[in-house]
Length: 102
Image 1 (tube, rainbow, N blue to C red):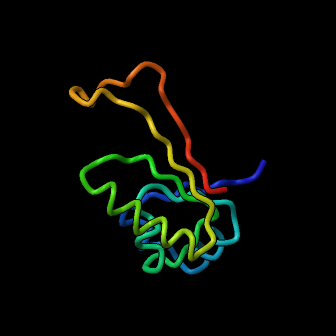
Image 2 (tube, rainbow, N blue to C red):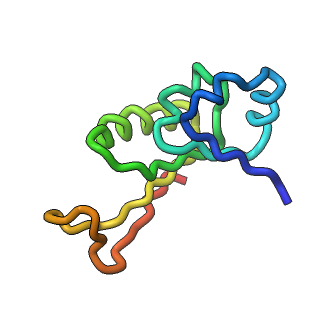
């Protein structure tokens, strides 16, 4: 079984050694949410990226991160669920969708 690294956006990524970064860069990895906006500070380029967070900055983060993903040739995935416009904490039935560039 292969290792897969899930890369979030926590400060602990800045504490990785060069050896750890090289190991992750040569392994399967999936970055989450706004990771790609800071990949150059962390010096890790993931193999894939998924965006699952929703907040008032979503449109801006998606725009910039998709541009970066295209530049780095990173596969990306976007999970979507449909909510009631008047009660956004409630999903509408089983309406879900995954959009993928890969």
